[in-house]
Length: 589
Image (tube, rainbow, N blue to C red; front, side, top):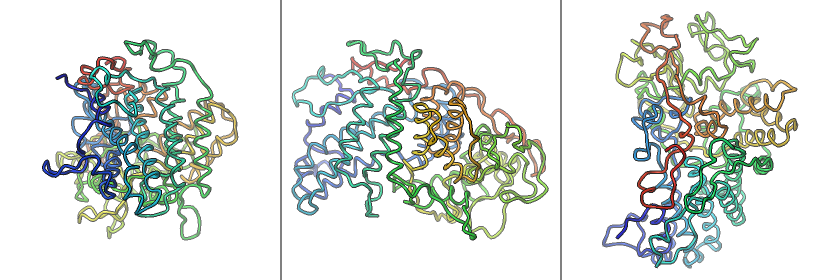
């Protein structure tokens, strides 16, 4: 018997099975699919299994930041190292969820086509089958999006395959990227009709609702309108299916794709009139630091659209914490990312009038810094102090009784010479770290990992609108709302379309840092060649015997990364290419 490909197995198992492997039963206690959907609790478990495939980037091993120019995570192991050095191939693919996402898609299709048989479900909760069927449909669409953002155009599986289908019948060619986008958005529209506008039951937070589905649609359309997929007449001319010759990525530019993306993002924005999440100080004034910090700590706050309720943020915090706080000292930030943050006057460090000073030590305390801090870190925007832990800085745990400066220089308590676990960049990541998490005693704040939030929708809307209707007043309005919450002045007026595009892209880099966007943003903008390859910089972690040792504060290359044209997409695993004769490999692989 010929071996089935992942896709063939997924297709056949939509309706050709006698048991479910998602319910964790022993071999002598297997349930048939009819048993599953005859029982409410088993049907609920099946739906939960579909949700279980959602990524959890709060786990540092699954976070994508170290394969972008944002970060270097010591503890991510060989996977990130292989990608960053170009040492990967179709037979060895790091960060490769391809199989799992198709398993989730297969499982969702089963649920969609079977759940209405659950009479007990309807008896207990009338209307539940229609609603949860819509949840599974939305999840299936989202898994397809996760596939196309990483692998490019993929195979959209048929809804139903005959049980007597041959192996040849189940070997399917890839759909075009445009077909994938149309399918995903149509499925999301269909799901939205049967979902509540917003989940209001706290016990059901994290489940699909209309707002989450609309946010997914907005991101899908933004990606589809972006330069990698919209009018790219250079990279994919020969990217075609072998048998039918179908072109998998169109080289025709369509400005209306930007309009669709803008309209989709604005629809989400209109559902959330209270705006961005903000916190005020004792005087009733906006506190930009606590607003941005607690956005990721306060579960289910008003900015959250959709989040994963169960996450590994405790694991993330432990990996991020320095050894002085009994942490694993491994989530480093690149100097490129440090340099990207604005000064507190809204200017970039290389702009005239920014006030940036590269060297020397501070002689006075400021709002966010202390005497003895390196001047490079003075007068930066509040999001910098939320996200970056630098040498002589303070770990954010609020239970600390006294200021403990963190020693990241070579001989320091958290430096290179102290242990094998150390940051290679001279920085650690503190975004997502709760001030109430006590690492030494193993007590952590329960947090959610945010998939979609209103701040992203503002930036999605501004980006799409700038491409479709340059000069529209809403562009600056929504970027400035992000900047206002960050404690920054408004953008200068009179920017050209190209200048505004650059401002929006930079604002995304800062506002959405370490949230899983950067690795795909630079690809869809077709700038990854310039940003993801070449030397990556940090401080000189091999130097320094005390806080006043200026040798530590020197930019050095900690890694030279490789990025080639083929890296715009992950490869399809070779076993799938071998088994599915209609599956072609991604360009360059």
